[in-house]
Image 1 (cartoon, rainbow, N blue to C red):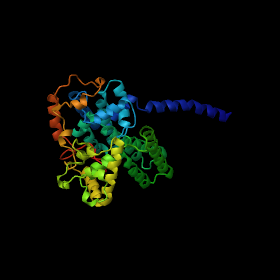
Image 2: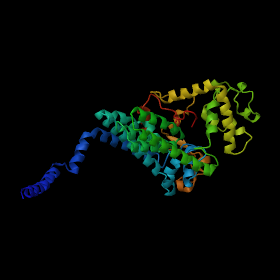
Image 3: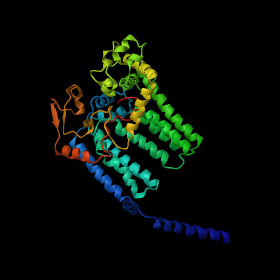
Image 4: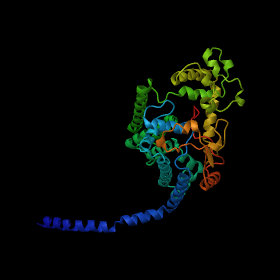
Length: 424
């Protein structure tokens, strides 16, 4: 009887204890206020960064287009298929906007991604113990004028950055990443790799980090398997559409653009006759950038007698491999130089970079009829096409802002600087 009475008394006390605990727990409003007070500097920075992005979106409505790349992304989004030159994920990202006739929303979403990346940087640094100094880490992505500019373009850089940042946050959040987190990070990097092929190499630092943090073997194996499955699945889809196992079909094009800047055909006596047209007789110091050999209308690769992109790629790849085999040190020097240039703490225009003007907010732009004239009407292009589109006071403000607020002494000259073995 005594034990039963004690149990009854305990049962009567338990609800009272739970009620007391609930009464002591802060309300949702109180927690929001506490969170606001703790991170008020970040909130102020976010508000300012959001205002800047609104100015960009309004000034350059509906979008900024990069010649060739933007158009190809939108065209492939009409009917998703494995693209020849670039991986497909950005076109998949653009697909709902294209089919909903809402192309202007693409930069809006990308601006939101930019803010999200800034928050992710802040959150990660804060968790690592940086406190309010975490704002300094988030500031470049929030306020860099060139970051604001690239987010307004129909280009894959913002999506790529968001996927890489997601992988970093996932794997660094805890001291010892678990299997699920490691696989999710690998999945994010697989997404980055099929957004921009340069992302393929990022699985290596992920695995090095997992080993360095003494993650479980299953976590490392899981990350490898997830990334490999993603790449194999995409390559198989590409094979079904293009006839061979690959992520893109343009490796030869890109390698040719890279080696053409230093190729010495006098050291290639066994060069096939049809490839001699690819040789530039000018000394390397007088040659144009790799992009000129790849995309330029006057590039020698247009003189090849073969027909079709796949056939062109095969010849260009053969030429590039011959040059690399005969001039390995020149190739290594070129690649290392580009890596050092890209990761330089200050930004400057290198000989292989596109003109800086491409990535500055334009005051006016010539309307490229051979590009915009082929864009379907649902993309919101006004007809008849004007010769020049002029922007107003918003553009002048943004251009001045960009000149003063950027994360380097000069701006990095190309959105494709991370291409270690190929030009854009």
